[in-house]
Amino acid sequence: MQIDRELINRVETAVALDNSAIAERLGKPSQQIGDGLAVLMGPGFYVNRVFGFGMRSVVLDEHLETLERMSSAVGVPPEIAACPWADQSLLEVAGRRGYQALSPTSVLAITLETYELTRDQPFEIVTLDAGQLAIWQDLASRGFGYTSPEEREVSDAFVSAAARVPEIQLLIASTGGLAIAASSLSVRDSVAILGGMSTDPAYRGRGAQLAMIHHRLSSAADTGCDLAISTAQPGSRSERNLLRAGFRILYTQVQLTNCKTGNAAN
Image (tube, rainbow, N blue to C red):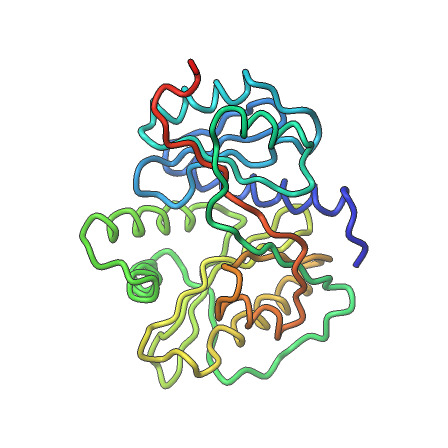
C-alpha cells in the first residue's frame, strides 16, 4: 500500500460522505466550509465536527468563525477531525483561536486487492432487513454501554438513520440462534468503511469482532472495493482485532475542540 496524499484524501472523503449521509437522514444537512464538510447531528450524537479541513487548501480564520457560529446554533462545541496530512494553516489558525487537541483516533486501512477471502466463520453473520432494526439497536445499546433513556434514544435514532442510507449495511453475528454482535459496512467509491462494531458484554472474547471484520472484508472484496478502512481508539481491543486482520495504521487523527463560548469574536 502506497501511502500518499491521494490515498489519504480518498479516506478522508469517504468518511466525510458517510457521516454526511447519516446526518441527512436525521434531517441535519451538512455544509461545506472551505474545503471541509461540517457534519452537525446535534447534542448527544457522536458526530458533530468538520471533516477534511486543510486537505486541499489553506484554512482561514473565517472558516473557523463559520464553524463556531454553526456549532453554537446547534448547541455543540466546535470540533475538527484533524488529519496530520492537513495544511499547516489548520493548526496555526486553530491554535490561535484556542482549540485544544483531544481524543486521538487511529485510522487504519488494508488493501483488498491481495486480501485472502475468508469463507468459514464460527458465527452466522447476516445483513439485517428493515424489520430487524431493533435487534441491531439493542446490541448497540448493550455493547456500547448506553444505560440512560437519553443515550438510548440518540443511539436508536442514529442507527435508524444509518439503516436508511443505501450504501450502509447493518450486520449481526449469531451463535446458537442468539444475536451477540453488531457491525456495519459502507461502500464509498470503492472504499469499504468498517464501523459500528459492538458485542454483547456477556459474549466478548469469543472472536465475534474478528469474525465480523473478515466477513466484511470478504464482502467488500467481492463487490470490487480495493481499500477498506476503519477507526479505533489507540490500544483498544478493536484496534488489536483490526491489526490482527491485516490492517495497518495510516495515521492518528485528533479532535480539535474549542469549548469557549463566543470564541469567534476573540
